[in-house]
Length: 443
Image (cartoon, rainbow, N blue to C red; front, side, top):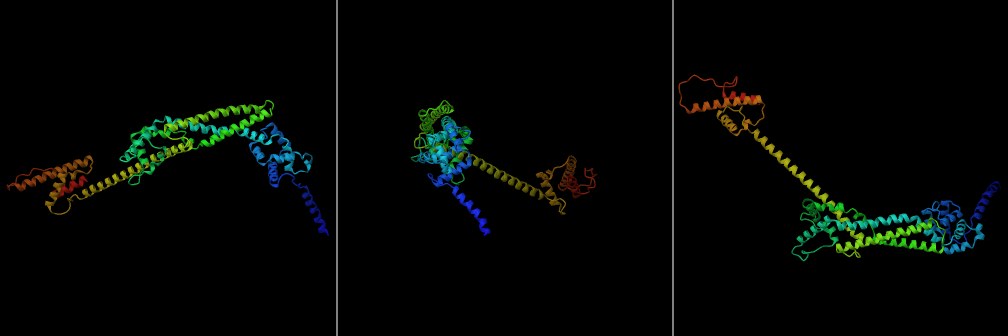
């Protein structure tokens, strides 16, 4: 019994909560739920929201709030039904109570759309104007670029040379779309493309052509602009301004900031429209200059091709630079290898010079010594001043002894004469000793 009594109060509270949940009379459950979520996120009194809409109070009405209102509000038919249920206000659900309050605003949805347009106007203007300026500037850059015109001329000459003898060998021009196909033509070894050849030729023989990539400042931005989207956005802006002007004519408000906004918006839209018309004229003139139909090739496609070619050309220049650096590296390595081999051969030759200290055969020693003296190999070592002087004295002594022995072999024997003192090294009694002493001192 006690447990039953304890459970009874809890069940009564649940029943009371069920009674508090009011049944929906006009709105469906999904619309009511979305409105409840919206109202819970902003937590503003309904009348305050209504007043902010009527006064266009931008301190309260943020862009996201107005967007949610346009999205979550029930249609005008349901709002009209709710407007007739003011007497039952307290019996309605919160979402339907909000609908009753909002139904008191005349032309609620057009008014909200006008407020949203006002809040987004500066953003729309800043999105459209740079795109128009970019396309216009890109057209002017192409028309004025002498370096790009020279490059096109070179491409035409090279193409006619390669196609000489065929029906395409005497072409007067080519489609701008051909530029992106230059890298499809490859050399016999498949290491280079026609674009690499053109980039190298321009870099070495026509350096002025290389500046065209710096002149194409706005081409990349223009390649991301959709002319069709620009046209639609401008037309939508114009329609929204006209709708606001009609609303103001139908319900003329007192002089306030809204009137000033409509005048300013109309003026800025007219200026933007003039810029857009000038852009279209510039692009049409560009079509005549490069001989293509601007109605078939959009600005986005045309400048996209040019931007793609610009990127590929710069990449080809980098590839050529890397290839030259690799070739130079291989060349330096080859020269270093040849130099090392030459030094090795010379070292080997020097090591094969006769050894004067080995063997007792004086004839072989003499022949080797004469060959070394005649070739100059005996004097190739680097010596200091003192060593050089000792070597010269040793050489003179050796030469004198050789000459003396040779003359003694040729002349008949005579009675011995008194010997003249010959210059010799200290402690040297024979040719071998003299050579040993000379070589020791020279080393």
